[in-house]
Image (cartoon, rainbow, N blue to C red; front, side, top):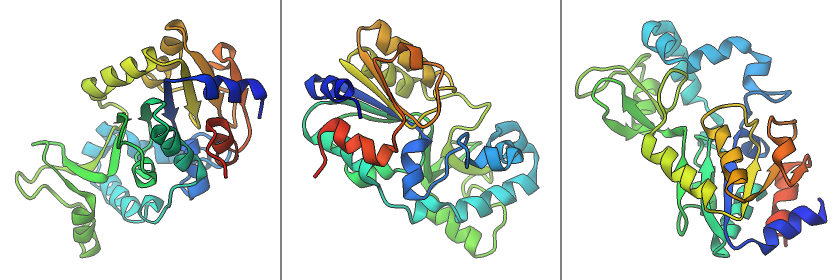
Length: 250
């Protein structure tokens, strides 16, 4: 922990936080691009996140439903880093929380009550119909999978269902992106946590915050394309460093 990083966050009245998969690894949810990441271990797994492949290949959808049924998000608990961000919100200093994660661990830790929480990639805990747009709780669809439906369809229009998450080839929600951009432009410190910062347009929030006058602090195990813009870069384990960084330890 560098004193400068802690001072930057401690002195800020408006902090915007961006989180990626790295914040949830200590909760038992693997990231994608890290040394033990899902795509690092199995590059072919990325195909399940391609919307065109998902629509065209029933066998891929069957495997995807098995994976959703077994996803660690159903049993994972927030770790100290999730709770630290919730503490920052309770301190009244969180301008907004932007997350690329789909596990809803931020909500479980108490985030999203007093400050905006923007799920730019959606949530695995909702299912949606790709034809009519109907959304239902994922647990309801997974109950059908558990009962033997390998590729469950929409009960209204019989369209293809998937998790309410953004796949490659799908557009992000414009209103959510606009809110995220506003949060990045209206903060004193932009804290990027556990993100590779390689996926646009979300990664572009870092230079937006920097150009708007915010001090950028990056907490990530691996180098990112925006480390040179940062006022501080921390490589320590996220669940250990974040409580100290936001002043919520002990």
